[in-house]
Image 1 (cartoon, helix red, strand yellow):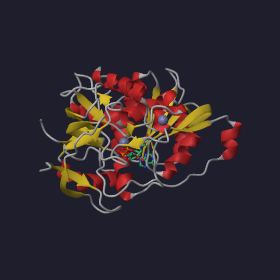
Image 2: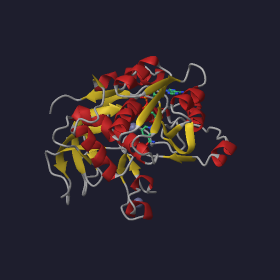
Image 3: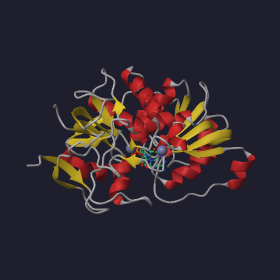
Image 4: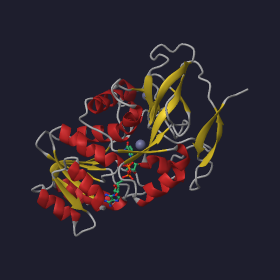
Length: 344
Ligand code: NAD
Ligand code: ZN
Ligand code: ZN
């Protein structure tokens, strides 16, 4: 008889997740089975469950792309991981490995990429099927619950800061100090940058200051573009927009220094207007950034293992998922909720 596991399932877009039994998957050739220890809850899971984006996941599906666990079974032919190893099953679930993007370490934009907790079932369940070539290898000195937010919120902000092309001593403005942003502040400080934190919540801004932000700006008070320009003496050399709010995007472009780079990372559905003359005449780069490759994953986990970056987590059981989604929607999650599946 097939074994059953507990899972939180999206059965219809925009409806509460259904807590139900689901068959424990059996790893086929080239696959592994991971027993979940912890899984972070990303704002992306909310977008997925609402069907916010043009490419929608097939229903029903199990969200979650910050799942960390222990490898408990190997399919035929798997040699790159062993039973008992701790791995993470990230957003970049797999890619083709052969196209021009895969060959140049841009596997995140591979046309054949699969996404964990989206096109493949994810970590809001007691077991996750994974591709061993794309799992994150969790350093020994990093607990599962500490590693969970790093494999999406961490890698995304670490990579986003890298592609902002900023040097130590320069300014980075980070818009949105939630799950992604509170890690972005720490990566930016660890990389020697001056940090201007931007949010609409004073509690989140106070947290940014505790984490090392040099200045903070509440985007609800006055004109945040002017405030950031004043605080950074003419605009931030790099801007990282993690806020899931279209308004923050237009503001972020305005906060960018001449010849600076504005990196778009937040994914609210929709479009935002770009002030063309300002962008052209000031030689501003506006670029998107989508998680990171496998080398970025190893690097951002190493920062966490060395204690240079530490996720601020609130542990909750899987059964609390709908309440967590409500709070995330309202901006009531201080940093990151991690679902705790308990010891093995
Ligand atoms: P979160 O809900 O934990 O944090 C969002 C933060 O933005 C909150 O602190 C909120 O107060 C703040 N905010 C809201 N409106 C704002 C505004 N107008 N100005 C400034 N701050 C504002 O969400 P999260 O998990 O950090 O995810 C953020 C976004 O990033 C989501 O849209 C998610 O889908 C996206 N994301 C993108 C990638 C990627 O690879 N590009 C990866 C992960 C998440
Ligand atoms: Zn995510
Ligand atoms: Zn490819």
